[in-house]
Amino acid sequence: MKIAFLGTHGVGKTTLCYELAAALKRLDLSVDLVKEVARRCPLPINRETTDQAQRWILHAQIADEIELEPEYDIIVCDRAVLDNYAYLVHARGRQPDLEPLLRRWLETYRLLVKVPIVSPPRFDGTRDVSVGFQTAIDGTIDALLEEFGVSPLRLPAGDRTQWVSLVLRQLRIPSRPPQLDLF
Image (tube, rainbow, N blue to C red; front, top):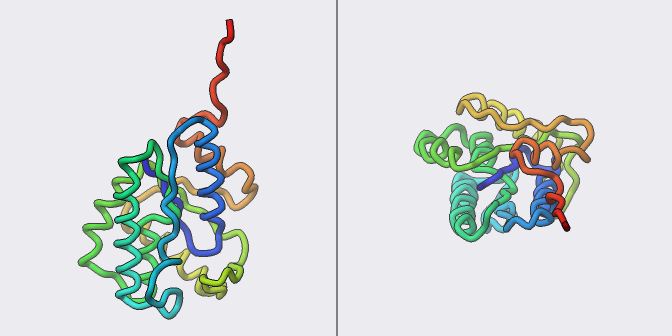
């Protein structure tokens, strides 16, 4: 089962991925993460990105998912192909040659979770801190979700402490291991 968090940069997807993975491990499930591949991209990203960089990121995301999926019960993805594509669309426009692959790959996720913007991005050594860029990417993601007919679980912008519980409920996974009868 693959679960992917999508949203613009700086919204807390990575933290949420680790929190969900920890909760799933406490339930004795085999879990691993597909970490955000843009951080290891050898080409320019953010507002300086290129077509080649975004294609590298998109294909590396798919390769990482393919690599991990047979080994674990659950794969938690820090991004999905759709939000990786949103950065390419923002920089270079729609890419009709990629869209059949994206549509097909979106079907491989059991759950897509859209993480809202709750604060401006902070400098982390990699990501752009422009609020305008963050907001533009978020809008592009929302437009692509609508265009592709995808309905993710949309997390509320309010209380972050409930986000993992909301995801577990959506997956119909208990938040605690079942109590064992001792007698």
